[in-house]
Picture 1 (spheres, rainbow, N blue to C red):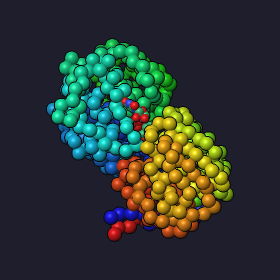
Picture 2: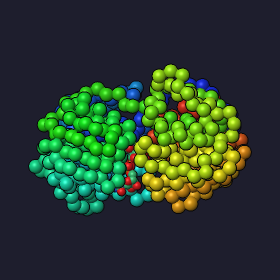
Picture 3: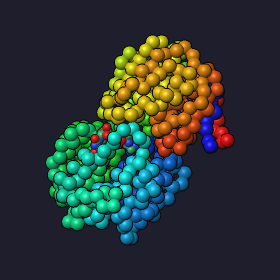
Picture 4: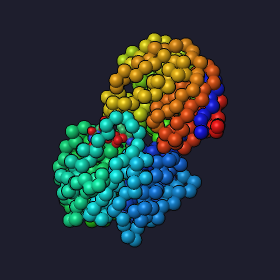
Length: 420
Ligand code: UD1
């Protein structure tokens, strides 16, 4: 049994470089399947979800290597259209392989996708769009089967909700479809812009990514390229939570502050002072207890993002006053509230919301994360606690953080990986 042993209550100080973004990396790895030539990706963090993706790529025939923050991919001589159950079960992002494999083989089979249990998480919008582009969908032996023997056809499609994953799936479908595609009501996250930049470098013709309408003119083939993954704004949000709760003075390097707009608004309301000492840097200073938020809610980008919500909740455990954060994206985001309470803080989940009654100090304790960001939030909460904590559930945290203990330890937190 592995866990993190954290002696909390030390202010954070120093500099930390941000790794590449998981949520940018995973769709770009899948999009590489659309390319006829080799792809190299830089600034790639060593995550459990990276390895699950590399397993999918190898099982469908790609050569895939990872070394020192770099992924090298070489196209398959013969592509297999079955996504392996183990990798699909481990990671929801296996859904990203639907459109690329449809283009490659005319047929794709996907077992039930896994990932964080944040609620229902259907993929109906992905499927509606793919069907509108000419795919036929059926279920055979508990597997989703999509077929498009004659390829996909460009179309106009309005997303009824700006789903990040559906926008990315449909972008991957549109780039090699016959004719033009217009997607409206799409998600606007920076990771979608990164995917579009990657695909355009490979020869795709995408305009409008980052806005709510995207136009794509289909091309016959895509070549390979070399691409650097954008910095991880959720890791940045994690460090903001840690320094707000534990106090201190830190500088993050390799940040794009514009990607953090909605998140920074929330932290400024808590009293965090931020500045940009140099391009690509963000300094965050906290020298008092945070102010409570009253009410706050998450929403699609550029609003306060859902992944940052449990992290912000951790920072608010020491706030003066009450805060309620409602997650309007996922129904089950705040399972970590029970863990906060086990650390001695006063928080509880109420439906889609977390309610926090801030206390000046809480003692720490034993808690186990049940999902990726909830687990990271427990670590941040333990770093701000006045005593010792033991946080388990590291398999969830490793899906999205290469070395969270090392990152926080580098800023002066007393945090150690232990095994029983
Ligand atoms: C992505 C991110 C995840 C983030 C989320 C919202 C990746 C790998 N993951 O997840 O970290 O928390 O965006 O910013 O990038 N929905 C449907 N039908 C669909 C698709 C989604 O109803 O076909 C609903 C979901 O159940 C959810 C909401 O739309 O309630 C948002 O989901 P979506 O934006 O698709 O999130 P993901 O792409 O899964």
